[in-house]
Amino acid sequence: MSIVLVFSGCVETVAGSTPEQRDPYRRRSLPLYLAVRCLAEAAALAQSVAIGWTVYQRSHAPLALGLVGLAQFLPMMLLMLPAGELCDRLQPRGVLAAGLALQALCAAAFLPLTAAAAPLWPLYPLLLLSGAARAVAEPASQALLPFLVPPQRLPRAIALGSSLWQLAVIAGPAVGGLAYALGAAGAYGFCCAAFSIAALGILGASGRRTAPTDASVLATRMARIAAGIRFVRSQPVLLGAISLDLVAVLLGGATALMPVFARDILHVGPVGLGLLRSAPAVGACSVALWQARHPAKHAVGLKLFLAVAAFGLATVVFAISTSWILSLAALVAVGAADMVSVNIRASLVQLATPDPLRGRVAAVNMMFIGTSSELGAFESGLLAALIGTVPAVLVGGLGALLAAGLWMRFFPALRQADQLAPAAPAEGLERI
Image (tube, rainbow, N blue to C red; front, side, top):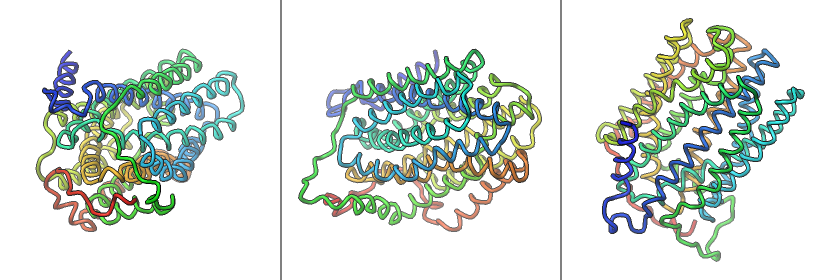
């Protein structure tokens, strides 16, 4: 009940209390967007748990889990930037709906491949298609939010969205693990239905629309894609925040190896795996709900570095733990630290990005952040095959600690960043 009250109060705060404050932003759009994002993320994570358990149960090889991440990383690396450019030419709402619909089709296709005990290799081409669907949906999801709320309320909306997203991260893996324990068909059937509902639901959201661009001033597609990259490179604070998150997640992520911990180290089975996958979201959701009411106001750069350092330290504790309770506690701390970093970085990116570049900057951000999870999964699986599962996660946690120290030196502008505030509009962007 307390969570419902907090959520209701936060939505009211973000949406505004008078018609003048809400215009042209529709009151229902933000809750609908948040519900769609929550449902889609729950489905994605339930599917991830099911796939991870399927692959490791059949192969008993950490490297096979790493290949799952690689199969999803490759299409995202190739398609993310073109998808961001597409968002800037079209309305992101329609692009997001198309990406979610494709994810629903992929979930349906997983069902016969897994329930019938088919060979393992056909899963990987389907994972490539699933990665392509995510590459389409993710930039659109990020680009859509600033059109649903006023700029001055964007940091609170981001924090509120993060809290609801983390509720999905709690529920999704737990549902996936439980459903898979009862039968793979239930897990993939849930994912297909959830993605389908999300695709239809996002079409009901409305808000401020992107200004139409005269076709006579459109640059070539490659030039438009390059404009998003140049913008991020020209902003030291954004480049530092995005690249730091990339390195920390790439090195410190233990998610891909959780089936190994659940089966061989902690001995807790698929249900325990779902709870392990949900544990980071418990910490993250608690922090996100707090930040929705109390967004960071000062010393945001320093808080970002401290959060990444805490993320690395908690990963080290998880790596060396042989107790399921201690492992759960460490993962809760991992999620709490990561959420501080995520909300600060997301606010910095959204507030500094002008409307004509939102899709492309979101795509660059996802190239760094979103694909780092999949590439990190491959790195973790490969390293675990070479030196062992526990040493691989331990090295990753120590690497995240090292990255926090190095980035403080490399990006002094980020370290000195004090407040989250909308940036002044840049000139000349109307032509790209």
